[in-house]
Image 1: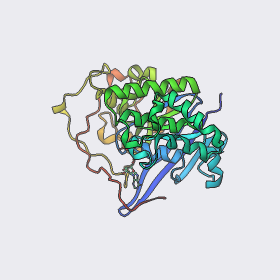
Image 2: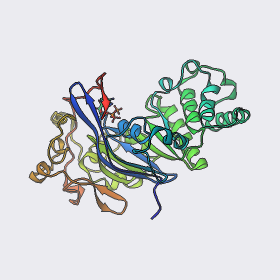
Image 3: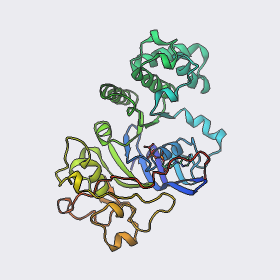
Length: 344
Ligand SMILES: Nc1ncnc2c1ncn2[C@@H]1O[C@H](COP(=O)(O)OP(=O)(O)OP(=O)(O)O)[C@@H](O)[C@H]1O
């Protein structure tokens, strides 16, 4: 078996907040192969960004291992992380917030080159090549971020992320702040860059329709856990977890072939609190198939068929026999990010 580029094992991220300890990522196992795109999808607040930030060691995880090119990022001290950072980059959702407002586009792209030791004489040429690669006119090089359009800013963000020729880029909702036409352009750009550079993406999104064309595999996250992993090409035919099927049912204009619940028939459901996760399967409150077993035992992420793993006690039941889960109408505990908090 080919050694994965990234091998996340039993990763846990907890935050200590004034209200208590909140579990954002709870025992996640996930692998990304070189040159692959794994999309991490799930509703707002399920822990996607916390996972992405822990992988990049923008925060220290509470426990678990993050094996990247043979090193455990979770255990490395900051000085040993620095050389690995050239291979690990991130593209953020809000391009304006991610860019230093005082620096011109050229300086922004050159900054990671300077940090990782590219000689000054080579930086301008490298930056020019990057501008060209991401489709950003060289004539914009002296513009400040606020003087660029939203699409140009995201291209600048991508150029900066790719400056050090990373092997893995965590893309955190990189197109959700853009209009649909720009989304299509930026996704096409990311795909082209991947084909050319062989970079792997861990692509975080709450929107399946954004990622399904780009991803090789899809990992579905629910309340801190991965509940299903499957090849993107099999998403609509083979999705087995009731939560994945719920996400598919909510994609406008598409229907997974299963019955779709009319909006008015869907009862409101409260999400469990991340401060006190329930015993058993954490999807049980929204799942029409939930049984005593689901209330008692937390299902492990287990292989269902080649390339697919599901954390559901009833995953082997043919999906045609299973009703779709109810839509979520309320979030009783949105767990807003408290101001005073530390990762523990
Ligand atoms: N620094 C922090 N301190 C305390 N709680 C946090 C912190 N960052 C995130 N959280 C909480 O952890 C949970 C997971 O948040 P996270 O941002 O990882 O989810 P997400 O799936 O990326 O959501 P979104 O799509 O809205 O960005 C949320 O309840 C959030 O409020």
